[in-house]
Each structure stands twice: as C-alpha cells, then as structure tokens.
Image 1 (cartoon, rainbow, N blue to C red):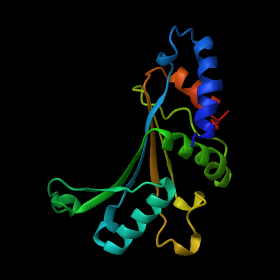
Image 2 (image 1 turned 45 degrees about the horizontal axis):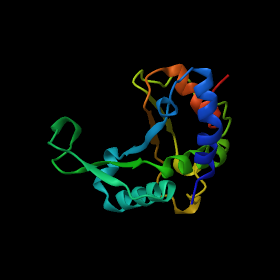
Image 3 (image 1 turned 135 degrees about the vertical axis):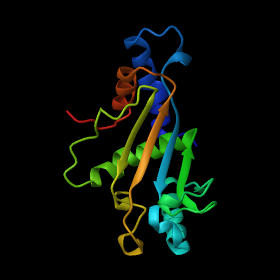
Image 4 (image 1 turned 30 degrees about the vertical axis):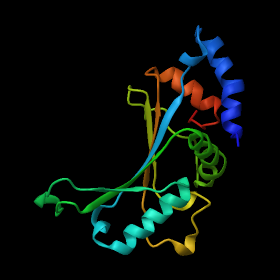
Amino acid sequence: MKQNLKHFYQNKVVPKLTNQFQYQNIHTTPQITKIVLNRGLGEKAQNAKILDSFSLELTMITRQRCIVTRARKAVAGFKIRETVPIGLIVTLRGDRIYNFIDRLVNLALPRIRDFQGISKESFDGQGNYNFGFKEQLIFPEIRYDQVDQLCGINLSIVTNTKDTDIIVQMLQRLGMPFEK
C-alpha cells in the first residue's frame, strides 16, 4: 500500500525542489532518511510498571516496537547501576516515516494548546532537525485515562543533506508548520 504523503513527496515535492535548487539528478534531492523518537526515563526507570507503560505508549504512537536502552556503566552521582534501563528509542525508516509525519502534522501538532508553529532554530547543521513534546497526550492514540505519568518525547528528523534552507523548504512542502 502506497502512502499518500510519500506519493505526494515523490510527485509534487521532489520536482519543485529539483527546479528550485537546480539539481541535475532526482536522486540528489533531499530525503528524510530516518525519524528517531526518544524518551528518557530518569528516576522512573526503577519502576518496571512505568517502563512497560511508556514502552506501550511509544509503540502505539509509532506502530513499531521500541528498544529499551540500558546504562553501559554505573554512575554513582546519578544513582545509576550497570544495565539499568535509562530510556526508550524507536527508529522509523521507509514508508513508516511518511505515515508518522502525516499523523504528526495533521493530528498531533494541532492538538497542542496555543500552538504557534515549531521553531526553525532546532537544526544542528548536520542535516538533523530536533524538537520535543512536553507530554504524550497530543497523539490521538494515547487515551488520557490510561496514562500513568506525563513525560516528554524527543523527536529527531534525519535527512541526507546538510543545508538548513533546503531542509526547511522540504519540511514546509511536506506540511510542517514552522513559526512565522
């Protein structure tokens, strides 16, 4: 099944970017290579029930199982022992990228209270765009009565180009609402 946003990207966005930035080959146009969702557990890592709850929430949001990241070595200052879970991570590739962006732009971002757009200042100069959400309730898959604790989610969009202006143009054409 072909995704609507992927079809739109291939048929509308790629030709416009090719003409605007004078690319000689269609395959050199900017693409999103992956999307990474990350959630740190902090002090909540000690509770296995909350770990399972957070894992289920990320799985419902992305429709893909998440990986539990564990501490590689003990750090006494942070009260972390070796192999204790410290976060959850999901990496989306292929068609799942366009499916997630479509749901993010059309369903999740409009549910943020007093939303004025996402910042253009979150580019790292390496072709990545990073931003976060303060709570998981903006996603329609999450039901309010099933949430144990509110916790933020970090999102990284990784592209194959390093030029920030080109990435902004691509994301705007895909429907990403940036601040004015």
